[in-house]
Length: 262
Image (cartoon, rainbow, N blue to C red; front, side, top):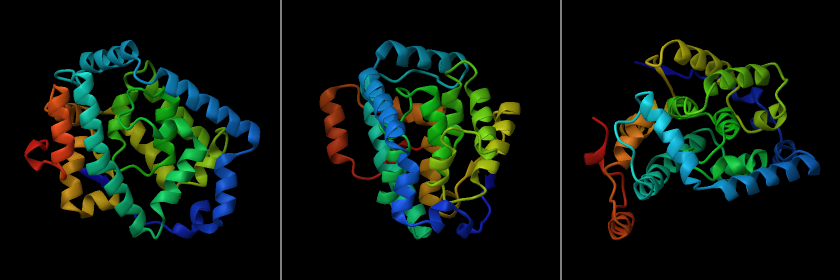
């Protein structure tokens, strides 16, 4: 069972009502704020691939029952590239085209809002707040993956709920920049309802984006990549050798449906 995001009045959002330069200034913030964002990006890049930190988070997720086995680092890299090229980018691009929005400009606004949030497709190298910010700045195909990922942090879901409440109340420090990106005025209220439902019951119906529900191909791929267990099962089926990984990336040009989650 899934929950569908209902149709909304797109004219209510800053993303649709303001000109491009206003949106750039709103997401970028003042020079001091943007310099702070760049410092956070530098910190994120410096810690990218910290094996001990990543392994600890994977171990916590396995203890919580989200992982059967932990894919190797190479398998995670190859799997993440597949997730990016076969699902995240094409599904998002399709969605924004349907809304009459430029996906490239949308990505640029996301970078200006939080540069560190767009460098890690799996989220295992990201901080707790980077993951939360990412969920709040993008109408997700399915936020369940990120909710499960947040459970690798102590109190991660509690913080997610608190930050969405602050955003809805106009008290979050990134309220202005996030509201310049998100095109759906009901998204954050739906997100708050969903994170609360997920905290009560992790098997609560998923909140799926409308183009996932309407496109059988995206729906099948989302079933694989939309949750941590599904994505990690796919990653664990990736090649273990550098030669095998290179062969896979060079020869597999479309999502291998034979590897899709059942």
